[in-house]
Length: 185
Image (tube, one colour):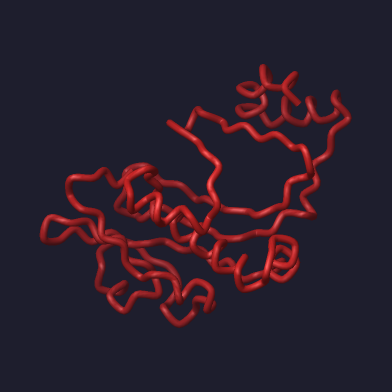
């Protein structure tokens, strides 16, 4: 609904304005279709912290999506299965939670044979909080996941013991090394 675009800043910053806009435009949020996918918490050593949740949903036919560029520098549509190669080629940059979530989405899509089957099968999936730890050593930044054997030894706050993560998470890569020449954010 392009006519609502000018209201974006107002409704993003004010919950009451968002509710008023929904009522005025006779819109509703179809939250029952959302599948809670993952929950990430910024490592405790980071100066700016986030508590982020990822959701998956099938969009209605003909739906147009626009990104809120107040927190983004660029946006693009890409199949989750193609993201790792695009990252490797330097075409896109994403933070580790986004990368691991995209890999998880791509694998689940293949395992279930399509979007609708994936969303149906993954509804109610376990999505425990994931708080990576940061280990800076030998000039590289290691982002260590809770299921990594070295997680307990990495500095910073943590969450959940390694054995408490479901298989769809525990099989994800356990550590991401960011070379010192690249920004981690």
